[in-house]
Image (cartoon, rainbow, N blue to C red; front, side, top):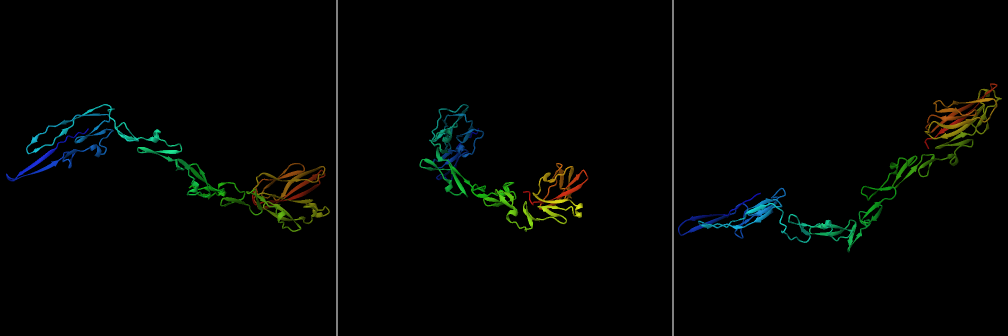
Length: 411
């Protein structure tokens, strides 16, 4: 607590130059806590509670006092008794009257009878000051359900919600689709808002207005069987030569033997995955002669034929590249059955790298098994031989010459 007691001092300096002439000069000075009032021609009290920033700390309240100020608890009660001080004459002058105000500080609750008058929109606080009433928080407003209440000092304002505008007393929706920034493709207005949509094959950019192309070839791991070509707003699938697109994404082999057959008359056309080949209609070579389609026989009347297989049958097949293994790919079977004979099967040639295995399935048949994956385009010629032995130790053989054409792709 700070208390400053102030006195007014008047200094009179008298200079006598002669008995006839007397000149008096008076200097007036105010002590601490007072300042000179030139209009009233006297010292007046300074209100430190108004001019000193944060005059009191720790939640104390500032109370102005003659010549100083007090820092008191907010619950303190102040009783003021005024007494006039006696005046006294002094040689050559008159002192100013000093009024001292004794202060009696008592602890206790604030005086409930002390009320202040606040303006409309304000109310008295517990610290006896007028504070704003938040009508929006207390519900003391008349804003409609489609309006927002905004508190002001001493009042409030009703305004439309975002996305709405006031027309008369109503709040109507703003059609943002008619205002910039415009959507790149399509705009959809909603109550109080809007959103942009893009055409198929496009997506919204980070600004939610611009539409950018979707690269479907990158977003999908399997969208085209062979190759994907991205285009603005769409994509397309292409296939390699010898194939055509079906279903928009799948590649299907083109049967050139039915469309663009370029083989000669003495040749036969064989279609395979991704292309075609021309083979002679009469594949027989001396001493073999053609007896039926693709079947060559070596006549027994020819002595050279005694050491050669009796017949050679030419067969053709095509498989896709990188086929799963092991895989059964071709069955060989005896067409003529002789009594009291035993048939055995073997791969006579064309299996130098061990890609195939011949598994006998019965006394008259065997299955060719692919045991190593083949990559194309490539052509394999495999001779499959059937040996026939009877009880009289008669031996004969026949060969199936299988041409396997491996396509360039796995489809």
